[in-house]
Length: 393
Image (cartoon, rainbow, N blue to C red; front, side, top):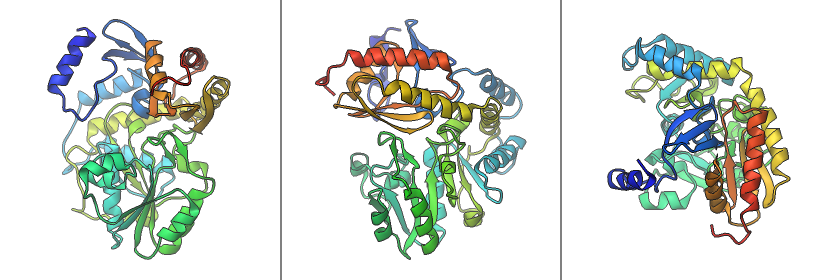
């Protein structure tokens, strides 16, 4: 099927909530994908920080195949060994020894569980950040600080306040009415924006002082992507809960809310649930993915390859700064040319993402090595060299 044919079909059958896809891919292996015409692409987006092991990794394939042939789903009236194994694994990796785990099917569902957790404090106000992205369900959208996404669906959940990421704003906003402060350690959809130095630590101090929860959205930053298992581990902060998804399943849909001891008893039987959440197929796959990340030293690899990429990027035309940590990087550009860069990179066989008009987001599989870094640097340099500063966005 040629590009015009599948695009016509897509336009006719798919809900118009997504723009026209840029390509139709038919196969992937490692850090590469191929379209129907046989064109190869180096994937430096990994399904938006999802495919931690790349495409068709033998560990992923074997885990899905083995579990699908044994037991896929039994509902939450029953438990399975992979479910308990994954709960224990997440507690260990997050250093939440006395915590508890709720399983859903996506990051948005993990945030929905976090909102209910916050409501169980008996308070109703939640503080989130401007430009934050927490999902598109009505609850998670309520926490999302992007008016362009929120406005078509107002009124949303009441009691949510969006503030700038400054200590002064947080100190002014938080009080005895605050149930929780919900933060991304790095604002991925906003363009890979780092929190100001000391902001997370101050948020912990203030939430503790006011009896509020500190809930971290680690959906994009978790599973080793930033060079630690979770981004909060770069600091001395211990949150009350973290929402995780994306990379923990390596391409299989799964999300989770992991609580720490301080918040582990807020949700009781009947307070929340999911038909598919924590099923044997999803949890067995996530166990295999996380075990392979650990076995292969991919958390350390993310830290090292991130530094290699930073060094290569700083030498390129149009690049003004590199934000983020590990293998979640935002490349700041000197003009609103990111969408032109994104399109040209695709023509040259490189998948990146224009997070906004002036930022290219990079989130490659954690398995990249010297060869992939070298090819990326070559193709991205070629891409930027062909883009004039006045290129249309």
